[in-house]
Image (cartoon, rainbow, N blue to C red; front, top):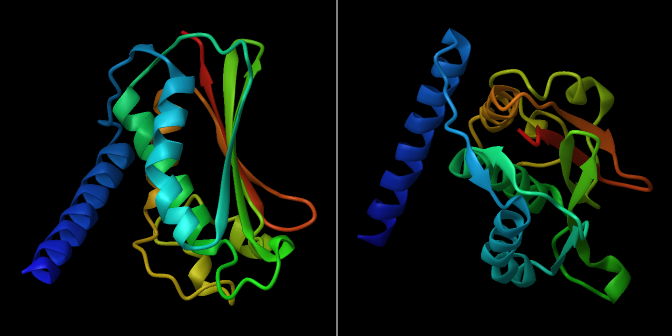
Length: 192
């Protein structure tokens, strides 16, 4: 019964991703902006992932500026973006037998105040993303698993939806290399 329930939830997520993707493509995707304590949202989501990352020998660190203002955002949609980026970071961060602390996976989630925006990042110390894949990541059905990085499954819609949500807020999203290894996904949200 649990397996059936889990499969049903997986199918529901796929259907919802396809619907969100279609709304974004047609220009009918909407966000409902309200006052949002973005620092509290990040703290809550990190708490939700902590037990999961601990079980995979991944350190999860939250790094927030002290002076983060209340912003206008669709809280649930921002959580959807964070969940997508965090779940991808967990998928592609080192996991396996840990021989010493330096071998542990690391995911750092941060929040910085910029002029007129807040900047949120999710950085990992996984294998990184090849440049040829990086250029296509925000397109439908493109997955890093199509490269030798990972054999993880997914629909290839998560980053497309994340981009649509961020842009509907008036922000931007992109990926950079995390030196010395890994990836950093960064997105901005305006104050108002």
